[in-house]
Length: 271
Image (cartoon, rainbow, N blue to C red; front, side, top):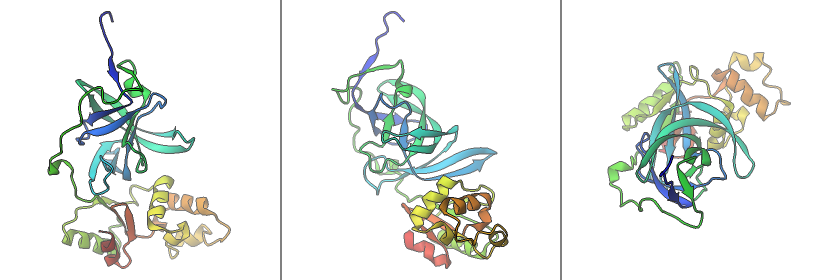
């Protein structure tokens, strides 16, 4: 359009993600990346009104004590290749983004950026046609935000329980959380089965091998021949995805840690 001038961006800028109601986030502007990525951990999918949503936690700053927990509809799951050549399946959500005086909608993939300097990476798809980028500059639009008010952070710890309401120990663990004023996200994993990626995350947090997470007394364990020592990690994880009744319960995740509630009081150790 005649007379239209694109605004100049540097290689890092302060942005706001309005839909997610997060405090301002320092973003890396990376035209070498096609997709945009938001730091997320404790990523838990669930169903709401028949549609898939995802609940996740984020450290908007590089301070693990400052945690925000958000929910968003899932618009897609995609395999993304990062700068190191690693391929990963990621949930994709949408959010409004405000950069300077401009606001528009972008897609964001959710992935752990805990070791990264920037909690948000903005790729070229999100910026296409809107700005000119000068990698020699920084913070061309807007200024560093003032100190945030405490209520903006949402400091309460995100807690999720993978729950089977027919299990007495699972019900007892849920009651223990309620008695301490904790309102966890409840995932009834028999209704909303975990995928292989989610199981891998849980195994990592628990520090367990797949067979250690399995309920060997379940009939399907014997029927499917899962006691075969020749079965590998991927085989056992596939079995738990196909038959979630095999997963030990309850499992509580909080603050980047996880515990199996056997006995139920074990879940209190990570709070």
